[in-house]
Each structure stands twice: as structure tokens, then as C-alpha cells.
Amino acid sequence: MKRKRKNKKIITLIIVSLLIFCGIIFVKNEKVISPSTQNNNSEIIKTSSTDDKKETDVASTDKVNLQNLSMPILMYHHIRDFNDPADKIGTNLSVSPEKFAKQLDLIKSEGYATITFNDLDTGNIPTKPIILTFDDGYENFYQNAYPELKKREMVGTVFVIINNIGKNEYLNQEEIEK
Image (cartoon, rainbow, N blue to C red; front, side):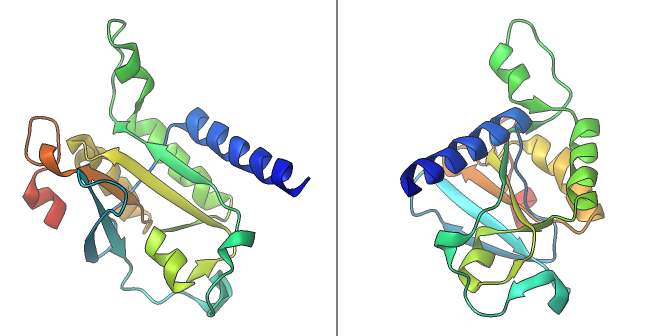
């Protein structure tokens, strides 16, 4: 019975993530770059806030029991205006910058606080956490998502394909280091 509920939660999370087609990073002043443990071709780039979090926004200063933690994780690929009937996949993996900004405003207005995966390890979890991720390290993240995140003091995570750094339409080293 517990397994069915857990599977239902996971399926619901996946469906919500796919419906929204989301994910995020950079946003604050400090960056920690660490290799992904899952794939030699990707890298996790995380940012953290230099602002102190208010005690009322944090569930606990102790490590959180991750088995009981439930939160949305939104995955994005492209933040761009794109509608090409010949490229249905590219169109379906794209969220316009305008819609993305509205989604961020909705997330904030609903009382969610963005966190990174590093926050899960440190136990620095707000009462309504949400994780935003961006797959593949497309340059339109830096051009369109990063400014909107920064404006709202939100954070996220970009999964960069190391072999694509600096290639056409992907983040370059300078953009990653900013």
C-alpha cells in the first residue's frame, strides 16, 4: 500500500514536471561547480544565496528526513520563443521567456521557495521548497532564464553537457563562470 502511494506521488510529480516543461540555475553570487555522479558527460552547476534565509522560511536547521520530503521539481530545456512545425520536439521542449516569467511569478505567489540539490544535503529546506532544473546547458538559459531568476532572487540547477560547452547554441565557459 505504501509503495502504491509512493509510486503515485512519483508519477504525479513526473506528470506535473512534463506538463510544465521546466527547470533553473545561476541566480545568486556564489557558484559551486561539481561533477555529476550520474554521468561523465554532464556537470551540475549550482548557485547559492549570499542573503541569509529567515528562520521562518526554513523547516529545520537539522538535516531533513528526505524519505518524508515531498516537493515539485520542474524541468526545463529551452527558454525561448520557438514554434517550428518541422521541429515538434524543439517546439515542445521550449517555454517562451514571457511564459517562464509568469511561471516564476506564480511559483513565488504560491509561497514556494526555490532550492538547489545542495540544500537537500545541508538540510536548509524552506516550508514550501521547489527545485528548478535546466537540462543540457543551452545558451538561451543564460540569455532568457538567468535574468528572470536573478530579478526574483530565485535559484536553480543547470545540467551542462561538458562536451557541448562553447558549441553553437550552448553555454560557453565565460557564461558558466558568471
